[in-house]
Every structure is written in C-alpha cells, then in structure tokens.
Image 1 (tube, one colour):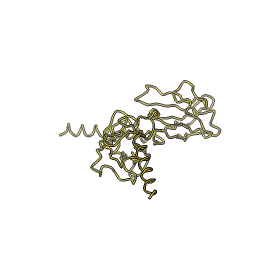
Image 2 (image 1 turned 90 degrees about the horizontal axis):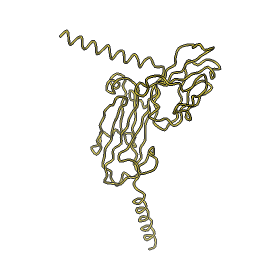
Image 3 (image 1 turned 30 degrees about the vertical axis):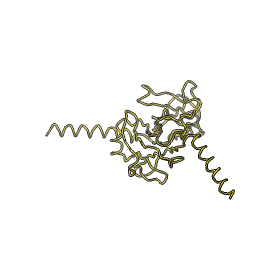
Image 4 (image 1 turned 60 degrees about the vertical axis):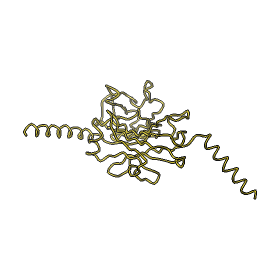
Length: 264
C-alpha cells in the first residue's frame, strides 16, 4: 500500500510541475492554419522597437532557441523571414500561420546590451486539417477537395501544441476539447454515419472524421473546433466539392430540363 501511495504522490508531483510550466506562460494564442496572428510583448518598453528581440523554441523541432528578430531587425536566415513583422508596440506578426509555427515565442527588451525586465512568453497553438484522399486541386492547403459520392473521406484535425504532456492530461486538467461539428454546430458524434476517433501524438492532439459521401454532401461544410471550458478558441472549416465533370453534367441537365419545361 505504501508503494502505491508513493507512486500516486510521484504522479501528482509530475503533473503539478507540468501545469506549473503552463501557468508560467504569459499568454496562450490559438489559430487555425492560414490565419495571420499577432503575438503581444507584454513587457514592452516605451520606444521599444529597436530594443526588442524575439526568440522561438520548440522542444520537438529544435534543441536551442532560434532568434527571429534581434534588436528590431529580422534575421534573414530563418524560414519565417518573409512572414514576420515587428509592430511599433513590439508585438510580433506572423502572416499565414502554419502548423510549423507552433511553439514558444519569447520577447526580451534590451537597453545598452542589458536585458530590461523579465521575459514575455507566448505559447502558439495551431489547428490544422488534412484530408484523405488528397485534394485533386493543385493547392494542398485548399479548404475544398474534388471527390465524388460513394467514396470514403477521412478528415484529420490536428492541434499542434508544445505543451509537454498528453492530450488526455491537458483535457482533464485544463478543459480543452476537439470536436467535429456540422454547419449548425451539432456534434457529429451524435450522427451514426460519421466515425469520430480521438488520439494523440508526441506534439499534437488528433480527432478524425470518416464518412462515406452521399449525393447531398456536395458543398456540405464540416468544422473542426477547439473549445476551452465550452468557449470556442478557434476552428477550421472544410467544404466538400464534387468533381467538375459531375457538377457540370448536373447543371446542364437542370438547364436543359428547365428550358424544355418552359417551352410548353
């Protein structure tokens, strides 16, 4: 019994340390892929632009922090260079955020080569949807895919977060949840035609939707959303669009039939 109590105590200590790490972050920002995002520097000084350095870190992608902006100047050797900008209040703007952008961002202020104040840390979480089979369009980031009725479709919604522990722990301790809903906002778990499965990987939470497409699914929208204690944080919409050939045939049929009808 003593051994079991020791293990329970150890588990509580570990979980407590993880939650302490989360609470040490000044701000959590949630976006869907493709959105622009603004990360605030809460410790900004007056006339701060030339005094600001932004660092990026991700325990799953880098061993050390990467400098994105040094004393107001963008680093040209970073993959985000073209998408970054520094505002007059020293907030960091990221254009067209992707799942590669998730992680921790740290704002530091320097005067005469000495850091002023404490770090301002922002945790960026990115929601992204991928589809199987892959879209036939040239852009893999499109929110539409040209497929046909009768085929199976799987949508994988992934929340990329550098939280340091599993989604199950995050949900139970912080109250986050991933859902697939229809256009009316109804949870698709309540509809038997959809298979909804949840899982987690090292650095992201996953919820998949699988269904066999029906004729009436053309232009139907499904939405993956992230909620925190029932409050919506961000969402990704996905619209099904059937192949142009089938749609064109249907449109011509309706047009011909209408013309024939009105000829009487």
